Length: 139
Image 1: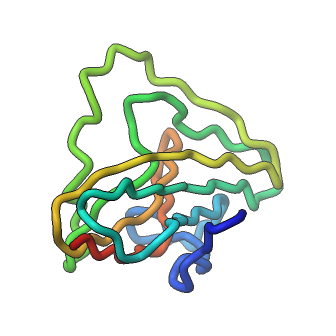
Image 2 (image 1 turned 60 degrees about the vertical axis):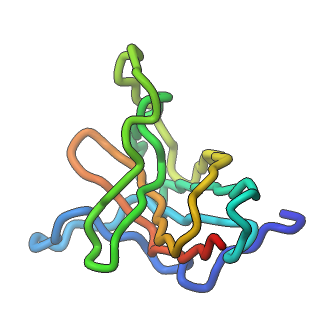
Image 3 (image 1 turned 45 degrees about the vertical axis):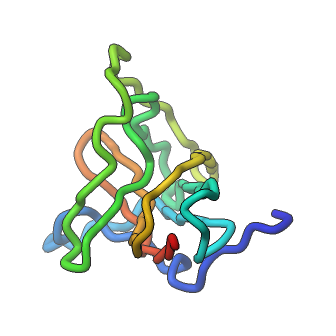
């Protein structure tokens, strides 16, 4: 991966967006990868979200340009962004990931100065899967 590194907080298995009282198996592994955890506000933040099917069956994930595969979260864990990426007329599409198959989503972002917590997200028809958050300091 060259200069890319997975931050230590990223390697845990994902949890569904809501609690999992039924103990459903974890089907997708989601990791968020950043090139640097501290950048200048003039820099481009290069972010990648890796989604891997760790189940024994094919899983369909949302796959269009309308939804980002990352979220900005506040210290309480609430999603605060991104806002709509742009007006989107795309039809909601799904792509099937076979067992063991992965996809990498790439983003180039700019943020104002501040501390940001970012987590990866993969959406299926009935639930969301998240990575652990990583922190990025923008000065």
